[in-house]
Image (cartoon, rainbow, N blue to C red; front, side, top):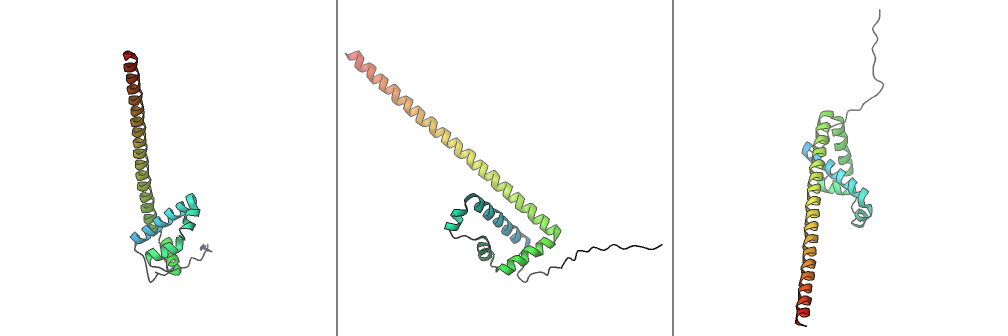
Length: 142
């Protein structure tokens, strides 16, 4: 009887640790920024072009990395599954908190608009009541 060894045909290159390695926290922030910039370009790409904001240029400047170092950091963390999973979970949590904040602000803004409409309506009603009282007084004098 012979033993058969099965080896993978896929050759996975080992990614070396970049010289300018971002911490996990910095990587989370970088990915969070990427998600926000990507979403912003989906919502209003023209506005980003008008402001001359390019995602990788922005990220490079903010995190003080050139494009190669940026790519190396992304590749490095992509190969570290557990760290990468942790980072993505933190990004997901940050986005969820941002969505909740946005929803709260939207609800508060809607409530304020509703109160403003009620205030204007009550002023209109008051004006109408005052006009009717003035007309009644004039009619009573005649």
